Image 1 (cartoon, rainbow, N blue to C red):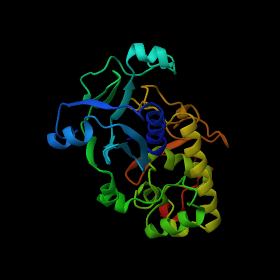
Image 2 (cartoon, rainbow, N blue to C red):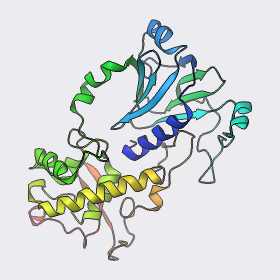
Image 3 (tube, rainbow, N blue to C red):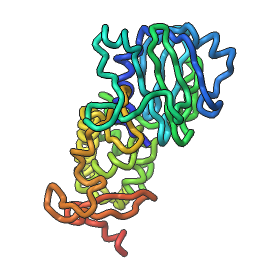
Length: 305
């Protein structure tokens, strides 16, 4: 599933590409992916101008001039790929939106729409936004913008870790809500902190030299300070590198992210730790595949008993 940096990267791309474009049509293949009443689509989506694209946790919002928004959750395999009308693209300098895999700056998607395309939004200028989702778990929901904060998810989700208002003290306070669980499970809990998944939990815990199985209440404050910095640093780096590409994730232009070239432990089992040289191992913590350095992140005594 895309994590905060991947969804933020998509948001940044769409915010550059979508505002001021007017929706001319919306086509979908399953109501599960596009659970919206036809009358609402006709009244509040068709003919609406895109105002802005925003993000909260792993959820995207396309705000419209009708005071409605498209709320989009990519789930496990969702993609949002923008394709400009070819003559318009050349005129506006967007002719880099090409297809075909290979070079890191080229698109990973083929000609769209394809068999995984669930929703196609067309715009008056001939451009399109494709919502692709192989597993069909994601969705694109049209609703009044003012009602978005009332969704159960938004009521429960924790603070944004890169918010200027979020600091190590707040991280500590929120982690203590899960004081009797291991630190990795606490980081993965979206009600504690928003947007953190398996990749960045492993990467930040390596940066802080904390074993993922360590119980939250056993971690001293000075370690939480280090964890906070490691977490924010790794998220910022991943956003800078366009996120972490797996077989499904692409940015708004269908291109791959390069963060995995900079990963320290994630999916590096059997390779030397870049800090000490010890062989990185993979285990299972919080129900997830977990990557650690046995020397830098010693397993807590309680966890070995």
